[in-house]
Length: 187
Image (cartoon, rainbow, N blue to C red; front, side, top):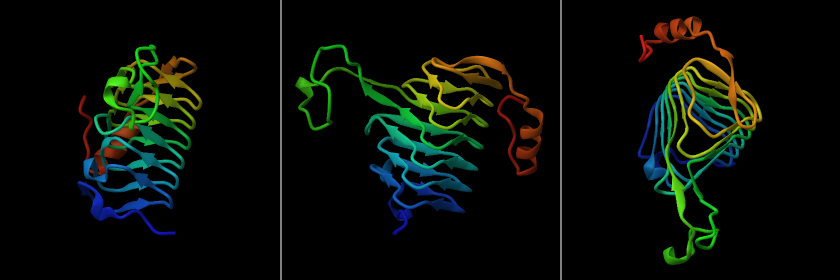
């Protein structure tokens, strides 16, 4: 199976690995840092800025089109099967719902807002994240959660909709990142 062609990307760092069947619809709008793994079946239709030491697990979908944006800080990840909705029809009945090929005057209104994972934000398997959400530094989202609102730093969230469960310790992660040459933006 052929690997994704790195030369199509806006920029790509070192030690970047793509699994089979990775599709990035607008590679000229995607930047990727160093030490990144993007697993098989990943599908990205948005503009994306991916930091260092990032893992995107198998069968992750990032949708929203050309105007939508995903930002992943350093030491972030999406586990298998996540759905990252950076842009979506509003489903308010003011137009037709569906493909980008519909003429603009016939389409329902769109909600297109960036999704941001600050450094050390981690997302469990099969999580859905809606437009406009920022996962604050150190946030962890439990598997199968639905994230509709931005989070507080260094907190674990779970549920539908996701709610804070408990604080997440940060010292070990910050120390290991510092040993690799990174510093927390909140230090």
